[in-house]
Length: 140
Image (cartoon, rainbow, N blue to C red):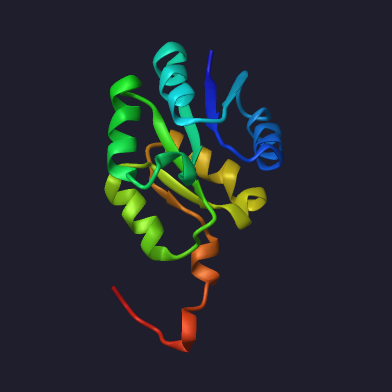
């Protein structure tokens, strides 16, 4: 059975995300803290983990490593309210498979899930429409 594990502290947001994910997965399991997320990953071995950045506790690298230890084959999709490309780049460098900005969940989440399941990395399309702060453009 394909299932997804959703880790999010924000009840209102997680209910909407859960509804979207239920259109793609036979089972959607929701947790609200890091400990439950790690235990759930080990127990159910989900196909995808969709998790809010706030559960990482400031250590995204350690957090992703811990998830991969619990469920080595899982695809990790990070949700974040921080819609700067630097946050997305850091998350991808830490080993997540995709990043969806919270403000783009309705338009990007299911596309992101499809992409990571197909073995591609994904960054929310909202990044392409974000203007740099202070009007200063920069390139990486």
